Length: 194
Image (tube, rainbow, N blue to C red; front, side, top):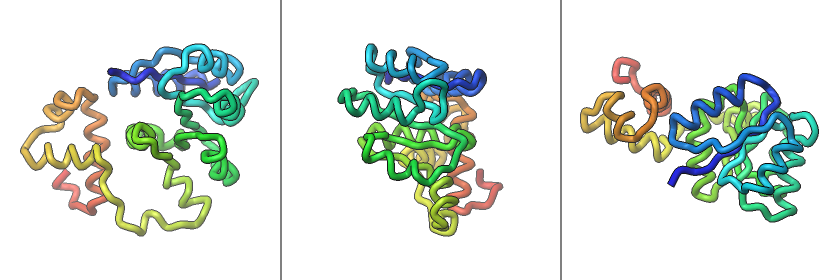
């Protein structure tokens, strides 16, 4: 069953790109809003599985919407999207039951991993942002492939092409290309193996 997804962002282009990406990956985008007030109303009425909220919107912010959902015991999982790198936000997810925090610049790269983590009742905080704010050297530690990437590695080992893997997983070829690129970086492979 496809997950029902809601997007709230006041920027005219970002939600359009996010909606296309999610629909390509078999998510059902059932609503959009340009501000926090309409976002809260929609989430309260429909309770989608996931809500992607811009941190800074007219009316209520993404954090304020998340707070209201938390206080109303709404089961929708909230994922915040932003261009900002504010350290105070990292203390908010647990207190407001926010499931994910993704920097917009890395959204396409991290979104599927974020959704996968959130679906398993985990919390996803972009390691790229955390490394810049906390001084942690994530890039120097060996990065493990995600469950999605492990699945793709197995398909590659079986000799499947990018197109065949995309058709098998019902995703866009560029999604597989992105995973392949991440696999090469994480496993420190020679580019010719990509």
